[in-house]
Amino acid sequence: MPSPVPFATRTLAALPDATAPDGTAVRLLPALAGGSLAHFELPADAVSHAVTHRTVEEIWYVVAGRGRLWRRSAAEESVETLAPGVAVTIPLGTAFQFRAEGDGPLAFVAVTMPPWPGTDEAVAVDGPWTPSVPAGR
Image (cartoon, rainbow, N blue to C red; front, side, top):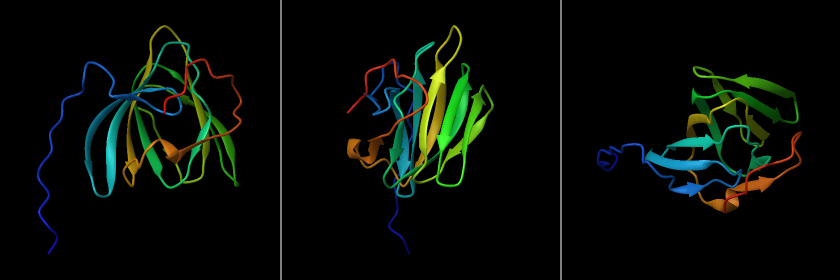
């Protein structure tokens, strides 16, 4: 039988806990052995850095704002519209970049599987847009 894991409850922080390697503000939420949850926010009209992940994959759910997401894998490439209610996947090894479009920030919650291991996880790649925010570490 697995070891008991304590319950976790966390309220979304007013201020970011960190800046992601792609330049988004990160507010940490609970995590378990299989994955971690976080809230990400990109300012209005900002463009992230294009990255790929070494060992994790993600599922995003947009909660506010509008924007676009570029994804490229060995098998396909696409640009998707992001808006509240839209969910997307970032499979392992996918290059991606995103931008906020409009008057407000683009905000989404994301599950990272397995949990985010640290800043060396993200690798910079060439994307379709010029980044406009500083990259985190």
